[in-house]
Length: 436
Image (cartoon, rainbow, N blue to C red; front, side, top):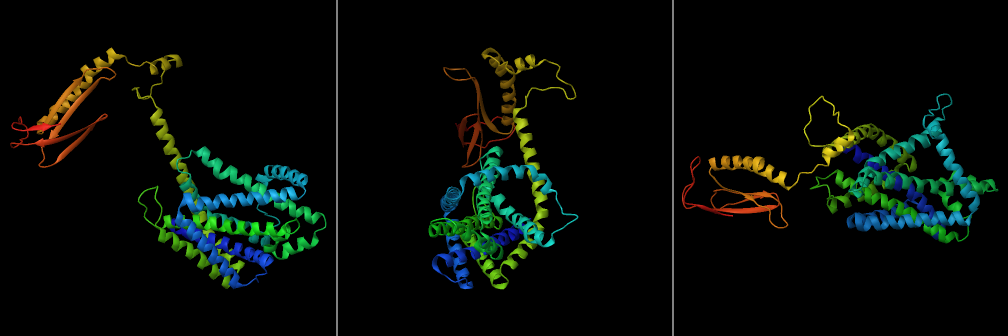
């Protein structure tokens, strides 16, 4: 399972970097007239790997967190820029329509298998590719989210990893998608043709329809770079954890292993771009995502099992410890059951319980220890001011030059045997005394 997760993760991230580098190369060409070449793509891959390596070696709370927050801020800035620089009323109206269409058509589109009219080419290039891409990302995304969400409740986890990202994705696709449709509807035929022929140019061509194109294109290029870097650094961290023996759940893989995986992803991306470009990336993603799609079923079963175990533990902790016969139902009314649960023993009953039950039981334990050669002191502590009833026990077993430590309640009693004669088992010990 770990091997499938490692393979799916490294190829999924490499696909993201490869597709992103092609788009970033066009952005640099627009901004600085840098030609679209393999050398430029290699330089972008090297830059991305360097930034990701610095981020992943800085840790989750420093490098990864800072870059992620900066990335989100820039992405939100782009959304607001297009929203308010374009036809705001149309975009908001279309956003509401998109939400309604999504809710209304979700089940139908989910179960639509195109049994009678199957668009093979479209499904291969979009549906199957994107599904395989998401499946390839699932192992490292799941583990990384679990890594940064430790201590959160399931409700907080669902809100932070499903609701908020879904809302952001909805805003991003709705604002930019409807902005592109608005330009096409209002006579942007050239823009539509260029986006269809050269998909990597579509986003920059859309930004060119608004003022301050140089500024918005620069922000888009930086945002695109950070989108990859924040994925690569978290992916390198998770790959390191996948392939190392961690000391505990709060530790991460050593720094050199994280650097290794960051560099390996960059080299793999460069190799696939040099062989067959985007087609090689897409085909590799589909091939590598398929094996892990079966592993996901085992992951779901494991999640269900772990949640059931957690429910059992919670139920066991909250269950009434009073004995009740098996197979019999409690016929007491809820008022009587509540009264029984809220009936706390007073001082007199507690003292009687200590004298008649607890102290004799501890005396039996002390006697058994004495039979095995231990020195035992047992005292019943009377209640003093501000204190509770209790039983004090100190027991020491002779061991040459060794200190024995016992813990009783909140007391930590350290004992050292000071022998002056041999300590025999099954007979009284004489000639030695413990210091407690």
